[in-house]
Image (cartoon, rainbow over all chains, first blue to last red; front, side, top):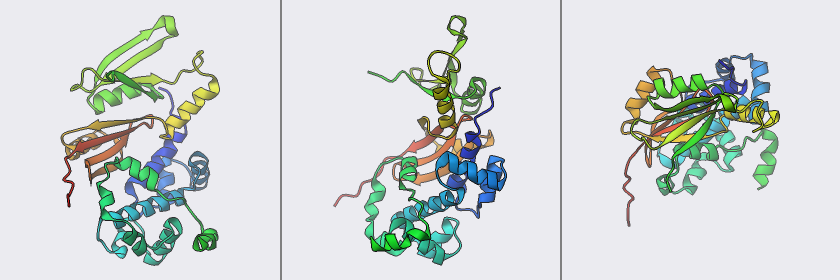
Length: 144
Length: 144
């Protein structure tokens, strides 16, 4: 029986973020899914996927939140909790950083008809997850 | 022109065979080891309901003239990172299949969800290949 390449364990951790983002999931849980120590895991994950596990989990949650803003009429606070985030304030800040506008403005800018596009869900998820941006990029984003 | 079969890279053919037959319930279409080709194993599985279509479960060539060692390693790693192939399957009852496959230990990425085109979910084979299971539904497109 051949051993799988080490990246297979990292993919398992990424799948955990994709599948269970709505739960109170942390980078420690992702590291456990990969069977690695926290520090080693974060380094290897970034090497494999080009993004830290924390940023991946956050952008997955933001992508899901954006989808819920487009396709439901749930409140921003409800959506924040529904994607596994607990602070509406930080959610709004992170969302604006990723999508360039607040959750409310984002919802207003997207007609609900977009949900009728027959693109497989996996494609939507893969392509709609925002680039991760840090607070250092805030002024640049604000100027744009 | 018709699709006859397509291939997926797998890191262990025995493990892949057990997964596609015992867990997904596919049939073995071919399992031939050719000594004159350096023990190349031609392994094809397919769904019982579609005799004419198969998936070849290909071991990544190692130490033969097809790929240099670097390419072999890249394919193994890309597959493990989930960046290789995908297979899109359809079913008549996505939620029932999800329950059954979960009980057999299939690793799901996302549970069944209602989408504009139907209900679908996603999972991985042991090598990291992505499989999507959709229960297609006709949609009513509102007309003005």
